[in-house]
Image (cartoon, rainbow, N blue to C red; front, side, top):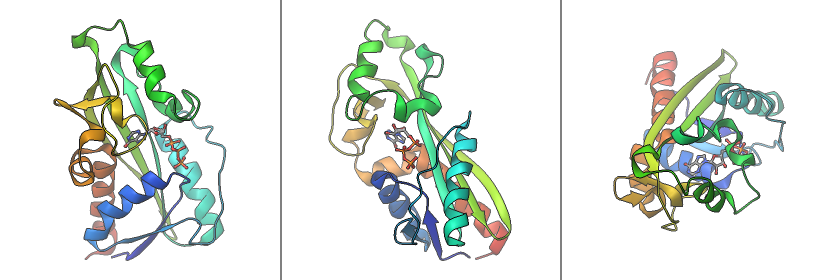
Length: 193
Ligand code: ITT
């Protein structure tokens, strides 16, 4: 089994969550900076998988160690799946939740469904693959909670927002948790225990 991976991301929250999820499985996650890479490639793919591969390949080419990248976002039913792959670019820093609540203000309760989606790209000397995970929920009416990051304060799972869950609670149900557990199964299949 692989004991160490590099994560191709500039998002400290993604890195933290990947560490929380993979450390108990015996895999250490190095940041791209710790591995000696300083990449921020243009994410011009049309899908989460394409963008995840763009990021993973850039860092793998720089460091030559097993590398993962995460491309993720929020797909809102009433917005035809937007912002989707454009989730990071949907609004200026710090204004994503407020803009989404404004855009959703006239949408009735039963049409507020949404899903977080995450695709992880993995690459090493034997090639690359991608794994995905989903987390279904709904868009709330106000921002609540201070945990997590990004759209978590407006994403309802049951009667709490994702930002009101503890890190452990989030990681058990999150799109990222699901995709990283898929990755672990894939690595076990490829490399054994
Ligand atoms: P890297 O590309 O460097 O990894 P990024 O933050 O730009 O970092 P993405 O391009 O994948 O990452 O954009 C993801 C967007 O979706 C961004 O706006 C996040 O805030 C949001 N997002 C992803 N996962 C999330 C989560 O678990 N909770 C809340 N928001 C999330």
